[in-house]
Image 1 (cartoon, rainbow over the protein chains, first blue to last red):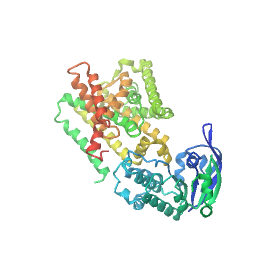
Image 2: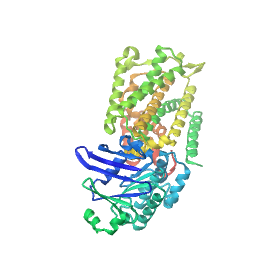
Image 3: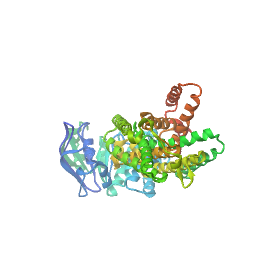
Image 4: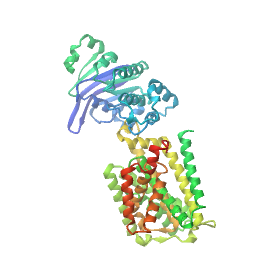
Length: 232
Length: 314
């Protein structure tokens, strides 16, 4: 489904990604793990076309994303929930969701389905996005992404700074998406979440993809996590 | 009642009120309101770009003057009728805004302000340079005999008021429709955060270009209508001052609200009209009023109403 092949990305003269390759299948949760500044967010932005590639290519469903304009990438069925949520803070919950719905001209049925997943948002439809709690903002960011009916979902630290009950809700939503056949690329620091829901993990260090491992291998070999992340 | 229906009802009520008020206003004031209605069309066009898309232009006088001269020169030298002259004015303003939008949108932020200002200044100087045809600063008059449509005299005070109102109504309903449409909502998303809008799959540059074209054409329509109803075409309307006016109307009335430009234009016009009866420093009074409004009601008058009273105000 998604094939990232030998990509190199730089911010002006500072190269951030070196020869990064991975692929993600339909219905798979693929996690990018690494310390801050390793290049995980850069990889997601590159997939979205927000950063140009120096070399390499990114293919999705037999389409070459790396030659597309950034505004054409989401139309292929790719939704991105950035770090910090990326909401339109002065718009209401309803307006934020509507902007997501308009991308694919999705109708009321999709809107209702999304609000059924996050019923708390239904109670806050007229409220401005910047007046929501952190957990509600994350729900809204996810809801807006889901309203685009994605085939591939890119999530950048979706559980950052959230209380355990909200983390559980976000995990459940991600797993439900996976079961519906959506491919998911997850950037996550919360190791418990990774071990609970991911299928495969790529360790990113200094802009290079050092290792790709099956999650069961990691569970049996926790020193790998310690080696790359410095945590137990 | 849906938000759309409420917005439409508000717009129709505004139009009906403006029609009714003509019969109770003294002639002097109905003349002022007619002028305000035309300038409100100008401000509504400006508001689409500034209030809804977040692009601050300092060169809208170029679009206003394009419509005005497009109509005026076509009527003066090609002897077109008022209707075909109006079409010529609109077409010329649309052409100018398409070209200027294409060029100016290669910049953003402060650079966009400066580039639009420079283009407007170039337009003003072109009018002066072509003084043989445009009569430069002095301008030219469109004769009363030319402002007749099948015996309907556009220079008559009553006719002028209702033609201004009719054209204002058309523009208000168009703006109301645009801001409720997917296109209008995308403009708001771009205003809120361009990068996020791009990330969600919207062609930001194309939307901004369309916004400049619609805004410029509506501003040009106001210029053409002004020339037609008041019978004068002059370079004064292409000066920086006329680029600032719609900004003031929109700031005072409420940026990003459909009726804000009307409120702002009425407020500003009457503030200057009343204060000029007492002092020559009437612009100072207007400036002080603007400072107070910016300090205590930064969203403008309609913006305050939307924040505290009518949350659904379009």
